[in-house]
Amino acid sequence: MMTEFTIEKDFLIDGQPFKIISGSIHYFRVHPDYWQHSLRNLKAMGCNTVETYVPWNIYEIHEGQFNFNAFNDIERFIQLATDLGLYVIVRPSPFVCAEWEFGGLPGWLLNYPEMDYRTSDPVFMEKVARFYSMLLPRLKPYQITEGGRILMMQVENEYGSYGNDQEYLKALVALIRLNGITVPLFTSDGSWDEALTAGSLVTDGVLATGNFGSKADQNFDQLEAFFDRNAVQMPLMCMEFWDGWFNRYNEPIIRRDPEEFASTLKTMLRRGSLNFYMFHGGTNFGFMNGCSTRGQKRLPQVTSYDYDALLTEAGDPTRKYALAQSILAQYGPTSAPESLPKTTGTLTKVAQCGLFDSLTQLSQKVIKKHPKTMESFDQYYGYILYRTQVKSVKKVQKALLVEAHDRAHIFVNGQLQKTLYQESLTTEFTLNLDEGCNQIDILVENMGRVNYGSLLQSPGQRKGIARGLMVDLHFEANWEIYPLPLDNVQSLDFKQVSQDSSPVQFGQYTLELDGTGDTFIDIRQLGKGTIFVNGFNLGRYWQQGPIGYLYLPAPLLKQGDNQIVIFETEQALPEQIALLDKPVYIETANQSHYQKATAPI
Image (cartoon, rainbow, N blue to C red):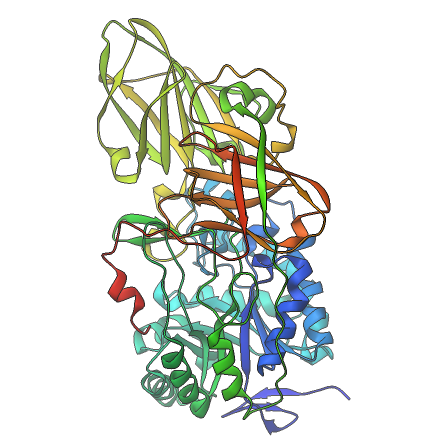
């Protein structure tokens, strides 16, 4: 017999009141071999539902080319949840935020400069329609209306904190329905009236939910009052119960007191349904960390998405997990959680080669009269190098980079002279030159696009150099450009004799293992860069902290010889690097937001 899920004053399963107790697991932040582990621990804690976002940009990295394999196999994730008897909430909105690169929007949208994201702009909606036509039919068979376990799906994410284009929201609903989705739909916003009015469609029968981490009674009262003003009856649900928070470079680790969290949880459960955000945070593998803002300043998030969640980044239960489980035992069955084995070891350097010596192995040179952004070359993540020749009769010249994002290393005749980041990229600087012809190389890193707020659609979302380099008072022309997405580091030739003395180096390390387990690469001896394990981009590291490690899940390792490549841009590579059995942290210089960050959210 097919289960019936309906939404009235309460959530109803086959006509009986049903309290949704859900937890967020982002399948794209957890190695696929560990999905079942996370889901089992979710059910063991006492949850009956799992929730996940679906980020557009992992499926359509290049326009019109879709990939549903491996980390992207949401159907497998839903099936694993189904096999465990969990219900599922899916949030496939075009924008997800989630502290994820560009909020889940694909980078190639930036090649449409006239497009308005997250609006009823016909060009934007055309691109969304193509994505939905590829994604939603795959989800259709898993709906509870077709005998599956998906309870409901999201229309848009915190739209009331961005826009109020109701035509856009209604167009999304129409697209979702057109692609065979028949389960109830919802929006999620802040619980105050302005955000709910701008971002919801309650009079069209779309459930409105709130996102908050504390003051549960106050937030649920506001949500209830909004329903009353609009003459609708809907259940109370916190779609994002923020049980922790994300972390940014050069800011202290953010922790939430477990006892205070548990007290808030009890209040929430008395009033309505909830979704723990996050249950298992996971990792921003590769170049997929997002970037938040403070005013006009960009603040990239770290590779770890531990979030101080109920499971650690490595999937282990925490004090919060134990407290939540003791509370949830009043609402349904619980069982003992599971942890994953850990291992230690040592990475040993066997070779290294410089970036300049390796350019032809990693990139195909493009000749342009003037610099163009990364996106102009159908590249959306990683690094890009610009090279030109500058003639000078002076040994010191003033210079300026115009419209460059995000971080630039400037070399003169192979020697690093300047490293510029954000504010300094808008300031004039000096170059020490030889009399005559000088080779100028500018290596630019995309450190992550803004994922939330007013700068979501801003010039700084285009990475690389948009305008050019001024020396003296003129723009330099005639450039060689080398896109460096670093998706092919296994092609590097470490046997070549390096002539490159710059700090920008690739280090080849080996790791011999008799058995495998999760581990943590100690990055405290390193400067800034990226680590690849057997060809997989593990993510960024930066000595600014607060994270002093990169989490390395066991499924990325193998018995015997493992090949690790480190791309380091700041300093000499060490001969050995330790693998640890637990995370380590770096004390940060910036303490200005510590008290605010650690207060209840």
